[in-house]
Image (cartoon, rainbow, N blue to C red; front, side, top):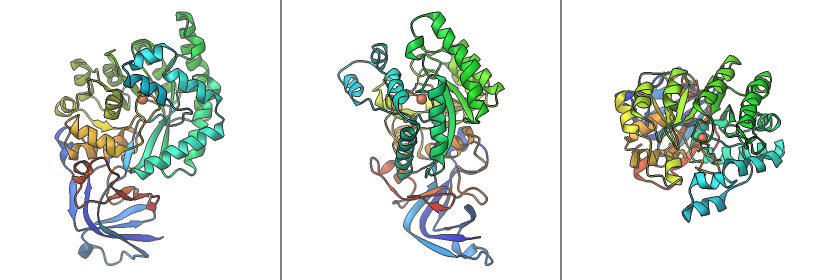
Length: 415
Ligand code: NIG
Ligand code: FE
């Protein structure tokens, strides 16, 4: 039993609870002024004024926060980090006017990352995941989902998921794996409808069973999109994953409205992600469900899109909203949840309080971890950040810089 006292905090700001917050409840943060934290065995043992700290709570170690503000560690519930190769020249083409879809149609896009990822060894992918996890931690993430989806054949999808598992052993960030074999059709199966159906059959008959056999993924995901997987194919993949014990999540209504949000709600998916093109029907379906609307404003920003997801409508109708980076080499090359929170307020018009809830507790809920992390409360894992700021509002107010001075995961200082 070892215990750590964090003292000299200006504020502790956190959502509360072991489940998601929705609607107006997303705005209610608990703010402790001039309080302390006590961590014992990796979990919060006390949160509040030092004068009220139980006398029998022995302290072994003492940490001076020097006036910092503490908030829960960010939970980034949508990332594509086990990839090889970068795409800065495609990015530059987009800056000259080509669209993401035009570049993908000319052989770039996801396919170019698939070539590089297939060529990479498992060791290289482990190293890439760790490099990105370290960058994430530096910017305040303590838990991140990580998707495969740049292998698109059995061997390489397994290689990506094994790399996530191996990286977890030393990663500063807790990693939660998702199989996204249905991210795109592989180059060898793109030329005919029957080849495409053949790849769906491979996912159902070979890839998902092998992933389940090695217990490599908690979640299963699919990219339902115009020109990629149809709604019906996406549903088949998610049902097959669910039958093997993988919880579904869905890339939905990103570049076009394919009624993906309603499908995600119908299938009781953990999350429906992106939602830039979601319809009224989709918004209502999510609001009436426990499927989290996972918004990725850095993707709209990086794609220079006119449209951002309708966060205000989703919140006002009562949907559960979370925020993530979508970290990937094509549409969102960032590990920073601070940037995401800033875009959520300044572009999606979420309040700072809603954005913090979305980036912590609600993300944890979508990863089925809300009982363990996502808020600063006695009993939960001590995953939290210290910001060089007198109040939590500085997270957006003082934008574009890294405000993090320390990151703790399971009570251990990882940055
Ligand atoms: O979430 N939507 C599909 N997948 C990624 C893009 C991946 C890529 O371009 O490599 C996304 O935006
Ligand atoms: Fe994505």
